[in-house]
Amino acid sequence: MSNQNTKRNVGLVVLLIIIIAATAGGYSYYANIGNTNTTQSMTETTSTATSNEAVSILGAGATFPAPLIQKWTVEYNTLYPWITINYNPIGSGGGIQQITQKTVDFGASDAPLSDAQLQNATGLTLMPETLGGVAIAYNLQPYGIANTTVIKFTGDVLAGIYMGRITQWNDPAIQALNPNLQLPKATITAVHRSDGSGTTYAFTDYLSAVNSDWKSTVGRSTSVAWPVDKTATGIGAKGNAGVAGTVANTPGSIGYVDVIYAAGKSLGIGAVKNAAGNFVVPSLQTIANAAASATGTPDPKDLRLHIVNAAGDQSYPIATYTYILLYKEMSNQPSMTKSKAEALAKFLWWAIHDGQKYAPDLIYAPLPQNIVSADEQLLTSLTYQGQALITR
Image (cartoon, rainbow, N blue to C red):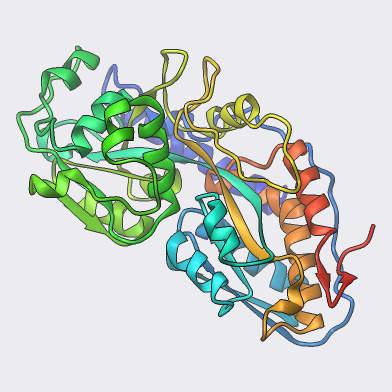
């Protein structure tokens, strides 16, 4: 039996234990987290380095995909020990800033760059690297509600919480969605990102799509003016890990984080009402459903995609692609050598093919084949001093 299968079998045993221990009648997210029919349809392509020259590559950006990117860097270094790839999860805003200033070799962002951002960095392009879901996480264990119990939310309720209008867990708007739960009369502490964040972009993109008041007063961005801060019930934290940790340490709190961060802290994970009117929890399958429904036909020349509030009975509504940022003509970066450019291009080629097999264990959905094909076209267009870095 392979190590991969062993890990999965161990994971299923752990999940079974959690399910058995769950509160009677409670819908357990953790029972669903590893249950997916998602298949990998991408071509298995093995990249090989053109030389054994020692190369060190530096990337920075989104915390959302950091567990997967860091897994990739370790696995790739095992294959090619002379290639070292370091990734610094500083947030999407920081990643965009550093790749724009050309102080890193690649950036990462969960937010698709705006026209203005692309114009400010001539030659910068982006490619989807994986899919994830923004979980609504909460901590009500001190009030007798197990974190295996799934609470239902709508976009309007979430907007109300983060606008400071819904401040108690037993507010009628939340209680009406969860009639079988006795929610506590406890203050809601709304935790949000304090740094520029693609996770914030995805969350506010969703709220803007479903709540007109949020759209007109707050909007969507990697960083917004949080109305809840004015009511003194909001707390900012840096990174997905910071938000998850703050929720774990704050009774009665709620936050938005990538699924793996919520699962890692054993936080409650909510079911969010989707466009079809169903309450759906984030899982590999429901995230993949959103992508399949909303991606459309990707344009390799512009791979900025929005998949929040996607159609489909079982589409998770706060799903998002996350992106690698790099320059098409890599010699435009002062520190870039031909060897480094070749190594980076081939690493990214490996990531969208062989690297996708590592995504499910970290609760990311593998890229759909049409996105892989679009990424391939983008990668074959990368050049160093006018010469293609990848040929097929």
